[in-house]
Image (cartoon, rainbow, N blue to C red):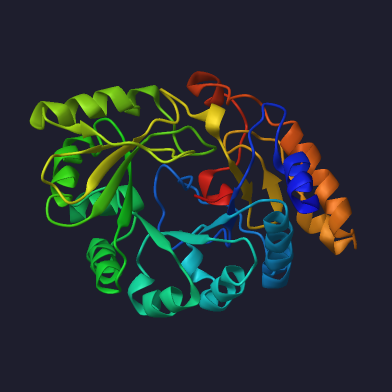
Amino acid sequence: MENAETSYRALTDSFGRQHTYLRISLTERCNLRCTYCMPEEGVELRSKAEMLSFEEILRLAHLFAREGVTKIRLTGGEPLIRRDLAYLVGKLSAISGITSIAVTTNGLLLVAQIDALKEAGVSLFNISLDTLREDRFKEITRRRGLDKVLDAIDATFRAGYEVVKVNCVVQRGVNDDELLDFVALTKELPYEIRFIEFMPFGGNAWDNDLFLSYEDMLSTVQTAHPDLVRVDDEPHYTSKTWRVPGYRGKVGFISSMSDHFCSSCNRLRLTADGNLKVCLFGNAEVSLRDMMREGKTDEQLLQVIAAAVGNKAAAHAGMLNLAQMDNRPMILIGG
């Protein structure tokens, strides 16, 4: 009972939102250069010594789990670049209270690692894929590799995962003409395609003209599939989910800009260099890495975490304001 009370105090903000979901970025490095994530000129990467070690990640994961976190998602950069990832997953999955470990990946390295990651305890993969066309894949990611991503999706099904979530950032005039091609993927296989609104971050060449809203995307899909059915979403789910009758998979829309879901947000983020961000779009951060390396106790860490969570705003500042705010590039936050 004492831990439950502590959890309520430490990870519940002033608006009553209890945070049970921790996203941990493992690296700032990536083997793609997606235009909406990586500035064209690249980013200045921090040294290995500035990144959280596995021991530091595990210490924080134990602390957050003690205070009520049940779900962990590993992100990057590209998390599969981090050496010995399966070892870390195994240690995280053994933490009392952790019921789910998910990984967001671009898929390029997944085929070789999927068996080890499944055995270690990965519950779910989100695979980023913004186009089904090789020439466009190169334009968006500034690299080649569409065939490897598609192979990774197939390997995930072969490994026995019942659902594969595919994250697709949609930009007007860039890839919005492929919406129906992605929907078609859900006919025979249990994909969950998640169309994500383009969001402003540092260095990602934000342009209002590239923005396509959830309502506009949904209208396009409904024109082709007028019998599209709304699906009940789980609590705290960020995606508005729909299904074409008779199709095995589902289609979701993440409307972070046009119809935000801040009121039910239960997510906290750790950047690869150890900063706590209580909001993806907020620029307030606190370094838990520095505190640990200064010898602070778990209770001292918890006091700082509780203060940061307590100061979380009711909602982000809105698309137009966010475009004017300083924030890290997405690659340095974690997907």
